Length: 329
Image (cartoon, rainbow, N blue to C red; front, top):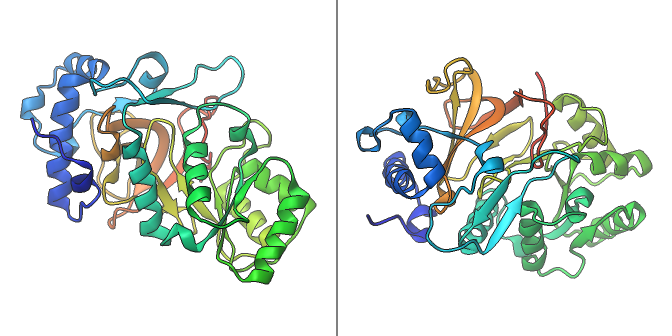
């Protein structure tokens, strides 16, 4: 079996190329990922009879908490882990080839935002910096490094320093990205107000038990007023994925060409819904070639005809992981 290579995956440009690669990766993972193979066997599904991405079984991401999800023969170079409150069992995602992750987030960012070297990247990610194993921190460190801007960097709870740096960015007229966990962005604007219309404020989700959850419209209205921007951008990703979706406003996300969102019937998880219907979010992430590319998340959402999607809530509000904003319509 000849698996698609990195160049082939990250140059996907049409539905046929995506489907061909997805089916090839599915057959490989059905044979080589032990937990996925057992899951498919228990569903009494014959991988050889799958000829559409809508027929592929999606592995519940809860398996990342209890099993090693790996389809490569090589050992993991790194194991990313989810955040969680004390006593929670966190997801673990073994990554056997970090180049897949690096190419995925670098090419994904460039597709949506252009050359990272033109930006100053400021990262306000305190809860992630305070623990080990965050895939978001790995990505943010790489973006900071490749911005090649001496002003780029991380902030823990140094809100005054961040405020001063943002004002310097206004004065220098440099394109600036502020990547922040939701509760920290809210904490910041309660202490400091700034008017920076050109600033890209990208919230990565997550209240981490620090604040009461709020609907997306209320959250984005507060952040827009606090930073003086028209729209709040968002990132959709999770420990179990190696790709990200991005929203440039209004909570509508798009994926890079090597990832796709489907929705499933919440009462019949093997039934994939048509577009514009609310259901459980299933992710196809072809960058996950060495683990599992077909994931059934705990998010509720809706996919539109152009492939964009919204995240509308979660199945289980007590199990909130990093990189996801809990919103309710």
